[in-house]
Image (tube, rainbow, N blue to C red; front, side, top):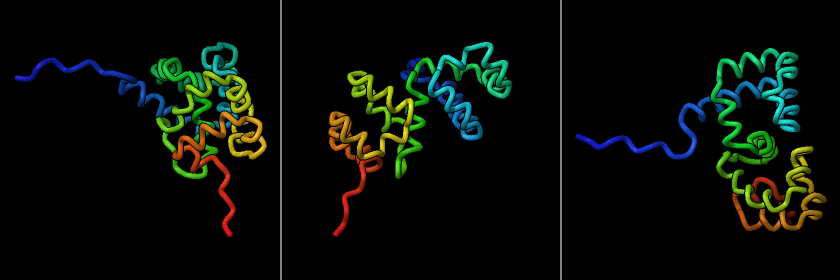
Length: 151
């Protein structure tokens, strides 16, 4: 006979499934995604939800999505940054920037406003701490840093 099942640590399976479903939903609703990235609280704004019935229906059908968004407050930013990567990148890899963003809210605000900045040389030049972070994290540097010219 086995002992009790250990408690689930980290996000529960149902929350992860809800966020995967939300990923698929957002893939088909890029304008909603932009709104939510800029103003995440809209997922609970009754007026916004009434103006966007597809989102309201989705959230009603997948109530664990809101739990997931509370667990992962940078969900929309990370999703937008993953789209900017010039190669495969998983959520767990992009989440490595959490501490950097915690220490540099201006970088986070700039990337929320315009995620494609992550690949702009001038942005990297103007945010040396971020560029250094990418160099120190080769998985992220590989997909975001401009390629060195070949001779």
